[in-house]
Length: 312
Image 1: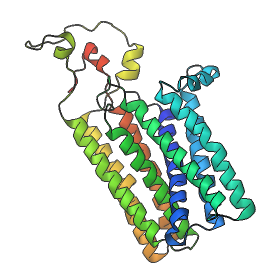
Image 2 (image 1 turned 90 degrees about the vertical axis):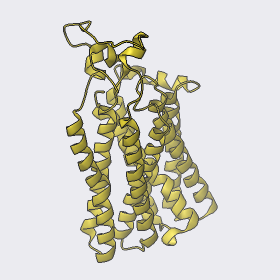
Image 3 (image 1 turned 45 degrees about the horizontal axis):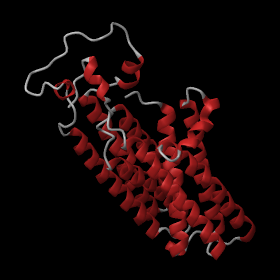
């Protein structure tokens, strides 16, 4: 499928932003590493809002008719896309209210502050789920039609959030042992989950030209395509990636998304060198951005069966 940059940015940055807020709530709830002080909390919330806003604004670039965007919110009863939009908008007042509360009261562990941050974090997690389900319910794309998609969206968003929060603590010179451990655990979990996903989509499964035409006991092949020029379907749904190139990009993705952030967090924590904290942030965002590009480019719509592109 054609990997639209707007949707890559949407799923990457909004997932990371919601992950930051959810983990901020957990850290301050359980006072992990002493909890975040008011300055650290405000920085975390601002980063969350910036990430989510980048994702939401980039999504508008994918609209064919932006002036009708409001109509998407009216279908929340049946559309996961509409639900994502509703919860994403609902996230802002709670996140802003928490930011203002901490700024004026310095209350990160008081009852009102914890209620606000937990509501914002919960809404963010619900939004990530809705985002994943947009793709998981599409039966026409086998690589997306699995519960592994929202699961991967969750663990990737939380891995970005944990890496950023652990790096923030190191940059500000605060205790970060448990936070670094949480970040390392989430990065490893994300790597394992992604490996399971790649193993699953590599299995020969799904519709073929034989099942699509109903000739299950015969050999079926397309002699002529139904067109002589490119069409919308071939442009949007016909993008393919050679398997050898895909393996190389996946190897690079694993290095930037998981290996470098893990190594950078460990080295940064042990040596106190702030460069490695920044390296972990940049590497995990870039690496998971590549992962998200692969997520779209490897998706093959069943329409390809009728255009001479045989699926597994």
